[in-house]
Length: 387
Image (cartoon, rainbow, N blue to C red):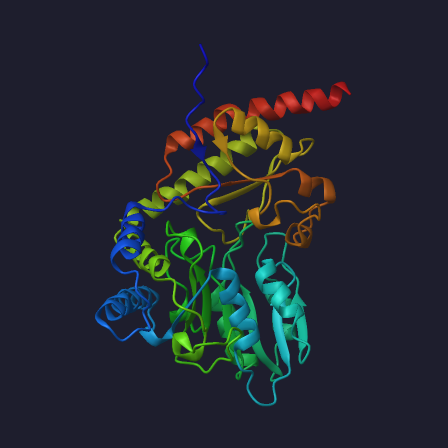
């Protein structure tokens, strides 16, 4: 008799999250009942338009901005591109400041800016931007600061309030864009209250559907569209709106807003236990983002002497799904620039395992990892020594 496959424990939530039931219901309803073109003026089109605008209001209220500041996109990548390439630099500014550890959707968009100087400030070994080096890069020439709020590979969190204060003092005409894709809703909204001007967010990181995100703007800032056509989204992002995806995004944010605050404290406690016990139970383990601000759901563990990809296969065979580095690097043999930026050697990068939780993760998920992973690492290290 065939043995049943173990129940999957999913710990790759930094790559994507399981859609919540509210999002699934909203997508299904929109596909079956709100399928008309939201730009059409007949009743069915107006009903689809109302679905879009309701979601826009929901997301705007959560973020603390006006509804016209929500520009729907195909995801976080497009939102970062729209900000980096479309936000107008104020007259006389000629410099954009970022870091050397950004997500490719932001760093590669910066590579396309040929008209200005790009300054990439290093990050510290804890993973956040080096504030002293950032201060040195800021002056009246800076027209845009674009950097991550929370890092998808290391789990580090940038001190956005401190960054904004530095920027306002030294580069008073700069706009500030943050990549909030990984930090959105964990547990807070993008830090508009701290004074940022825009943020990129993505639905599938907060239990919504894939293929939809938004660029959030603090004011109705003029922006040069990167995708032109029929003039949708107030002529900032043309293309017929993805009504089911937008409906699911709005529903996911409603579910997020209804999540009890203690649930997020419990999530952070799970991460802390997982990080602490991996260090205690697996000799030589190093947890990235230790000693600095960190996201409450990502544990990036360097396991010397073990290839993370090999450990992943063993973990999956035992019923646990995780990742090595970022999912968007899958299929690429290039080593992560972000992990190089925090000082890891090539061997350490190859040995970095990422375990990422969600707000519905349980202590039993963490205990399963702590029970199985140390034995897997010990076995693989022994095999390596035997060679």
